[in-house]
Amino acid sequence: MSMTSMVVLGLSIALVLLLLGAFWATLRQDRKGRADAPPPQRAAVETAPVESPMPAPVSVPASVPGADYTDPRTIRVGDRIEVHGSPARVLGAMYISWQGQQWTELLLRDSTRRLQWLSVEMRPGDPPHLEVLLWTEVPTQGMVPAKSMLIMEGVEFHPIERGTAAFRSEGEAGLPDRGLLDFADYRASDGRLLSFDRIQGRPWSASYAQPLPPGSISIIRRAS
Image 1: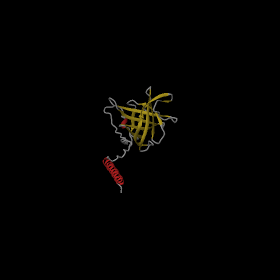
Image 2: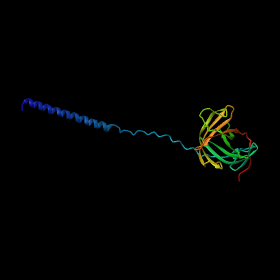
Image 3: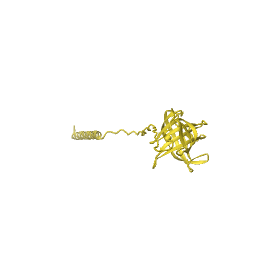
Image 4: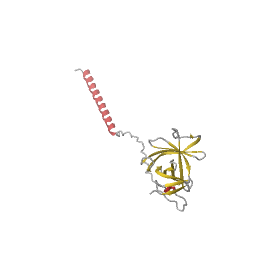
């Protein structure tokens, strides 16, 4: 073999060894980098917040010490009462709970067999006061409660409160033992109240409210 051939062969071998060494060093560095890198984290899964269930509705009647009139909170299903001197029988009741507020609605049937609801609620304030309302149903003609002003029988009513409450029923109210009640309350500029409500799964109904002053209700006979 000539001297020139030997030189070329030696340079070729050296170049091959140099390339192999560079490849080995790169491979080791790549493995080291992968080993040192933190493991990929699992993507966080967003879960919708679970709303806490509403507390069970509770009705705790109390008497008013020193009062010279009937406390509406003591009225019970089966009682016979008078409202503004008109006799009525308490057929059933709903005990309602919503955002810490609790109130009772009593289903009345008067001597003409007309049905009305009587709501009794201790309202917060300074001092707190007892609010008693007599509700008379009005035809809605397929209306549903709007989130803005609505007109009923030519009167403008503006929204004041709406939500979904839990209830427990008793007596002959024609309601499930427990359930949810959607409601939307409105007030006119002259102070008149209008309320839409529905047991979930049923159509909306609407009623006007008449506030009753203390002494408007008397109990004729207690349920046995």
